[in-house]
Each structure stands twice: as structure tokens, then as C-alpha cells.
Amino acid sequence: MKNRVDKLIDSFTSKDVNDENVLSAIRKIPREKFVEQPLRELCYDDIPLPIGHGQTISSVYIVALMTQALSLDKEHKVLEVGTGSGYQAAVLAALSASVFTVERIRDLSSKARVVIESLNIRNITFIVGDGTIGFSEYAPYDRIIITACSPNVPMSLFNQLKEGGIMVMPVEKSGLQNISVIEKRNGGMHSKDIAPANFVKLIGKNGYETQKM
Image (cartoon, rainbow, N blue to C red; front, side, top):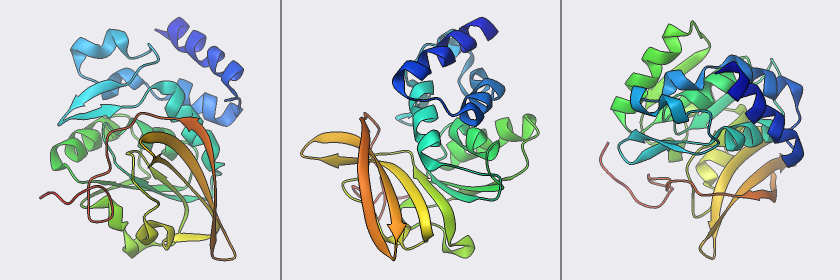
């Protein structure tokens, strides 16, 4: 397994993911723990994998790319929208002070918590709810990451971002998804696209649609 991990991560440098702290975190977090047993042989193929409820765990490269774009440090407080398997949250936790992760599907949140606790990761807070409205109790956040595609940048989340903070998320424009990096400067929104994407839709009040939790 280690050789497969190293080979995969080595391939990222040719695709502009070269932050050693991010690559170290990817090496340290065992992705196989976050997928069901029948899929574990595929967990270091660089592909998304199903985790149930119509959701997926992102490819390792996409996790690394989005994490690098956040420019994290050990003082940062991070909001993640879309816990999913918990893998992205675990990577974030290795690079920041605290992570607050919101998931609308209770079963996924519960399963992610079990895995995270088994790995002795203690700086993640799990919330079940509509992530598109954020989590104002602990706002503002230094960094925000959204792991589902939105038709726009939810202002409810942008308003919970600190001045000088960074938000990374996939946004759909004209039927195409791109990962956007959004910075908050003087209260304004400054964004750039860094890569094409293919994420599930962001469901919620400020996403594509509202569904019962």
C-alpha cells in the first residue's frame, strides 16, 4: 500500500501540487479507512469512490489540490461543508488548529466520526445540518472549503469568512464545474478558477435545492 501511496503522490508534482505539508498529510491519513472494504483495493487509484447516499469520496489529487489552495497553517480555524467520508476533514485537521465539518446526511456524519475517532484525531467538530447556511456559532473562519458543487458562492458562507480569508469550492458556470479559490479582501470577493471538477451537487437552502435532513 505504501508504494502505491508514494507513487500516486509523486505524480502530483507534475500537476502543480507540491506543498510538502499537504503531501505529508496525504501520506499520513490512511484513505482506505474511509471507504467500504470491497473498495479498499481502489482507494489509491486516483478516482472518486462511492460512499453511499449518492455521495462520493473525492480523488486524492482533488483533495490535495483543494487543500493546497487553502494555504493552511496551524493557527487556522476551518469550516468544511460536506463531511462525506471524513477523509478531507482528516487531512484538514492535520494542517490546522480546528475543523468544523457540516454534513446534511446524519448517517455519513456518524460513520465519519467513528473513523476519525479511531485515528485519534481530536480537533474536528461534527455538525449535522444544512451546510449551505454555514455554522455561525463559531464564525468567522480563517478558511472555508465546500466539497460539493454550487451554482454560486453562497453569501451566507462568504459572510462567515474572516477578512483576508480563503474559500475553496467547485462552482458550476454554463453547465461546467470549476474549482474556484475565493479571497476576501476589504470585504470584497476576489475569485479565480484553478481546475475543472466533477462534484455532486450542493443541496440546501443556498445550494441547488432544499431537501429534508
